[in-house]
Length: 259
Image (cartoon, rainbow, N blue to C red; front, side, top):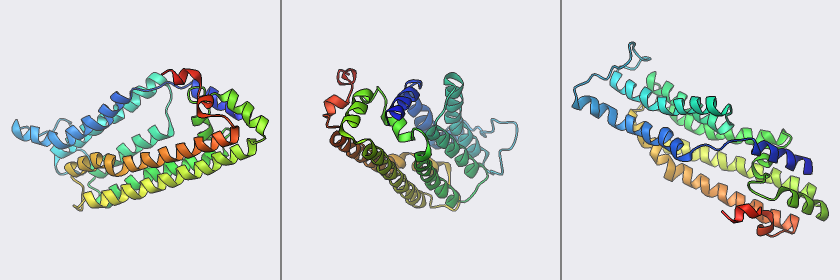
C-alpha cells in the first residue's frame, strides 16, 4: 500500500491546475448566451444568421443552427487549447466534450428530445462505471485522487497504517468508497434524465430549451450530486482517522492548514 500511495502522489504532482473561472465562463455562461440571445439579436438587426458557407446538417432554421454551433464552439475550443498547452486531459474532460458534441449532433440533425435525455443520463453513468472499473488499476483512480501531498501527509498516513496493521482495511475502504462514488453517479444519471424529460417538452429540442436545461442542471442535478460527493468524502476521512489513529490535523499537511 505504501508503494501505491507514493505512486499516486507522483501522478498527482505532475498535473497542472486549470482556471475554474475561465472554464465556467467558456463552458457555461457564453454558450447559454448564444443559445438564448443570438436569434433575438439576428431579428433586431434583420440578419439571416447564416455565417457559414454551407448548410449545417439537416436543420431547417439556419439562425438556430448558427446559434448552436457558436455556443458549442467555445467549450470545444477551450478543450482543444487546454490540451495543446498542457498536453493532457482527463476522463471527466473527455466526457464533457463528448457531451457537447452529442448535443450538437442532436440539435443540428434535429433528433428527438428523447436522445438528448438519454445522452444527459448516459454521461454520468459511464463516468461512474469507468471509476468503478479503475479498481483494477495500480494504483486505483481514487487512490491517485486522494493520496497526494496536496491533500494529506502521505508518508505519515502510510507509516500509521503500517504500525496499526490496517493496510488491508485501508484498501477495503477505497473499494467501498469507489462503489459509493459509482452509486452517486448513477443517482446523477437518473436526475439528469428526469430533468431532461421535464424540460424538453417538444418532440425536437429548441435552443431555448437546451439553454434552460443547462442552467437548471446546477440546482437540480449538480448540487445534489455535490452533496453526495461531500458526504462520501467526509465518510472516507472519518474512517481514515479510525484506521490510522491520526487526527485530521495530523493527516493534513502543515502547508494546507496555513492556506
